[in-house]
Image (tube, rainbow, N blue to C red; front, side, top):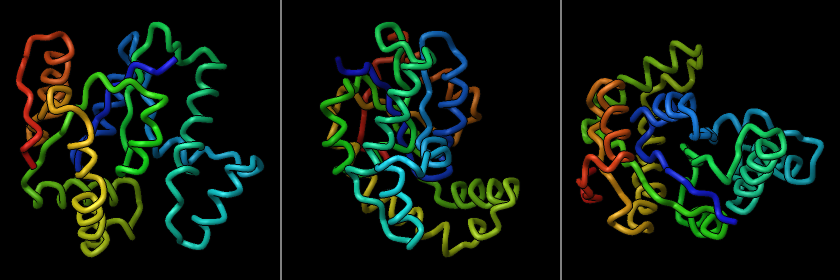
Length: 202
C-alpha cells in the first residue's frame, strides 16, 4: 500500500518546517520532518551505523540509506499508531531532497500534491536563515557562505525534483506571505478552492 502524500517543497528558509508542523496538528495529517528523522537515529541499527559512518566523516549519505532511515521512521510511527496510513495523509518536508531519493520513494508514496513554497527573493531567505540560526544558537549556520552553499545545493540538486512530479500536482504558493496566509493558501488548494497550478516559478 502506497502512502497518500503531500510534499512541502522549497528552498531553505521558505517555511516548509513551519507549515508542516502546523498541518501536522490538524486531524488526518501526519507530518514527518526529515530533520527529526535524522536527529533521532538509532545508531545501533544496521542502517543507523551506515548513516553515522558517512555523516561522521562529513561525507554525503547515499540516497538509499537516507530513504531507508526515513522508511524506518515511518514504520515506527505506524507501529506506534501515530500515523494511520488508511486514513491519514503523510506530509513530508525535507525529503525527497534530490531526484535519486524521489525515484526510490516512488514505490512507497502516492504523491497527490506538491506545494512549492516559492520565494524568489534570495535576500528574504538569507534573512530568515540567519535569524533562525541565531535563534537556535547554530552560529555556524548564520555564516553567509554556509547559507549561500545551502541555497546553491537547493538550486542544483533539489529544484529538479519539481519537474519529476506531474505538473498538475504542483501548486505554487507565495512563501513571501505571512505564515498564516501561506497556510490558508495550502488548505484552500487541499479543499479544491484553488485550481492554480504552475511549476515554473522560482
